[in-house]
Image (tube, rainbow, N blue to C red; front, side, top):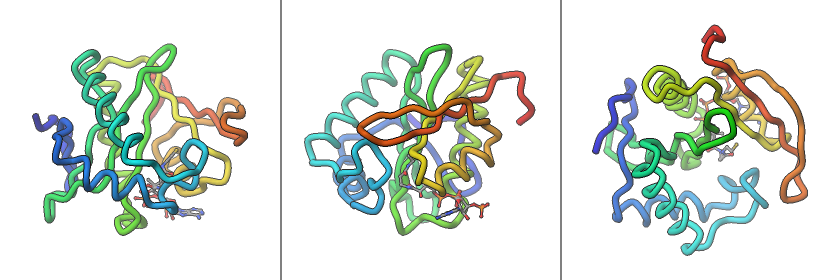
Length: 169
Ligand SMILES: CC(C)(COP(=O)(O)OP(=O)(O)OC[C@H]1O[C@@H](n2cnc3c(N)ncnc32)[C@H](O)[C@@H]1OP(=O)(O)O)[C@@H](O)C(=O)NCCC(=O)NCCS
């Protein structure tokens, strides 16, 4: 199913079985994964688990980390969406390297954030980003999230950002 939150260059939809191959080529790229989790590229098994969890989440909650489709060419170029988090949801994104630097993550995330507040009814949306991930921190800032605290996971330091429904966006 296509979601009602497409943008000028992007659309979002549910996961299909045929997404596994193009999505895995993104998740097995070391430069894409350097600031995700422990920084290791994913095995095919991990990519499969991610897609299976996203499909379950979509069924259970009505949201997930949706595939991002580049309208020109219809390629799956990554994901953007939510996972549940205490008091609301956590927004996240990942794009294939060849699509970086064109404002696409910001374009995707702005639409997803709006959908989260206006359609899904979240009161609070958070993002967690590893400290050296400057591109992702910049996207978070452009969305209007504010830094709240720092914590460690997988031996790495992360920043927790948040935005509430009544914040100016
Ligand atoms: C993070 C990511 C989604 C950004 O995608 P993108 O489409 O290139 O992002 P945008 O073009 O919308 O915005 C990136 C911003 O970061 C800036 N930026 C990029 N690299 C940077 C760097 N090394 N230092 C500082 N700023 C940087 C860009 O200039 C741009 O800001 P601007 O619009 O003010 O010029 C992409 O790099 C990615 O998929 N990374 C790997 C996965 C990942 O880390 N996901 C996030 C986990 S929290």
